[in-house]
Image (cartoon, rainbow, N blue to C red; front, side, top):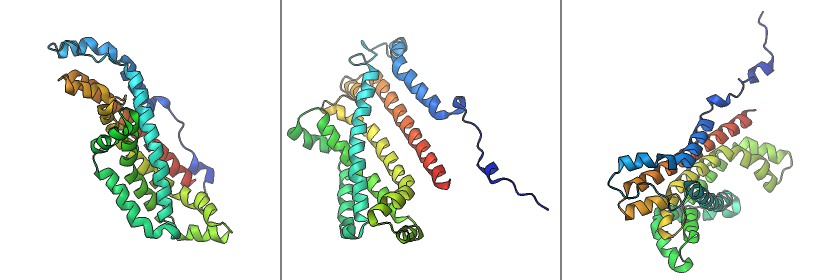
Length: 259
């Protein structure tokens, strides 16, 4: 005679161990990199002895990180609001006929190089963060729109029917059933969009926006490879950190759905 195990036993998970969490290690490493980068000045001086100024000191790297994250955050928020709203609209009966148009427009937003959008925006808005905000918002729309549509279309019809049978209206059914079930797929699109924008935001320094691309652009213009390396390492590490953080959120959503 077999003895059934308590159901609670299946839900027991090992305790969280911070010292074994790669996200925390990467976050700590990124903070050490950003704040400790000035300590590597002798290293770059020895590596590039031909350069008079081998370390970028016009701005502090912590300040550049804050400005970079603020620009990416603002543009990503705009892309999320517009992209999710557009994805919801074209999956409703009233907006189904506009789906082709929406997909074409968002695809064009990523087809045009960000530099071209910056070049068009600068005469209208001037130099600074505004042209970069527009370019990054347009560039980040496509994965969000596509994943929102895909996520909502993957919601099981049985779930919709059950919600309708419980007396839920279209709006409540969307917020209480469809969006929660589609959330992991939508988040995957947001994850891709943010990762793209973190790297692309570096180009915004060409129009006067203050980002981690500033030392890269200055280094390219002045034939200073040390500046390029310093900016690129920080941008790359930030992109990896953001991607890992979104992966953690996605895992939590998947666990919540199974609970």
